[in-house]
Image 1 (cartoon, rainbow, N blue to C red):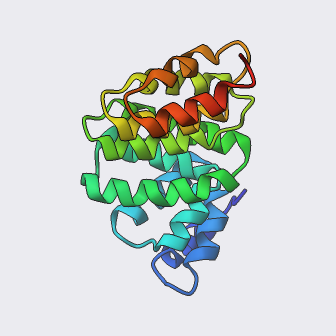
Image 2: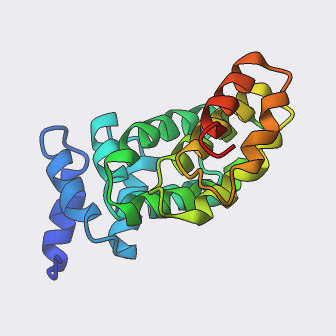
Length: 194
C-alpha cells in the first residue's frame, strides 16, 4: 500500500501523462482503496485514461469499484458506457475471481436497463465470473426469458458457464425458443443432463 500522500499525488499526476499512465494505474488500482478509486474515477471522467489503461484497471480490485460508481451515478452517455463495458468485457475474464465477482455485481443494475446493448454487455461481464459462483446464475436466469432474442442468446451463452444438474431446466425450456440458433445451443447445453 502507498502510505505517503506525496507519492499518491505524484501517481495522480502521472495518470495524465501517456508514458506513465499505465504504471500509475497499476500502482493505484491494485489496492482497491476508496481514495485511490476516486482518483482513478476522476481520471476516467476527465478522459485521461486510454483503453489499455482502463483494461489494466478493470483487472484489478479498483476496476469494479470504479465501474459501480459510473453505473450508479449514470455519469456517462450510453455510448460511453458501452465502450467502457466492452473494455471490461474483454479484460475481466483475466482478472482474479473476486474481481470478476465484484464486476458482475457492479453491472447488475444494467441487466434491467431498457437498452438491450447495455444488458448484453452486462450479461457478458456476469458471464465471465467463476463457475463456482452460483449467484451469477441467479443473476442471469431472468434474462433467459427476455423478449429480445439477442439478450436471450447472450444470457444462454453466459448461463452455460454455470450450468449444473440442479439448474439446467431453465435452459431446457429454451429448446422450444422461436429462434433456431437459441434452440440448438439450448439443446447442446442440456443434452448431458437429460
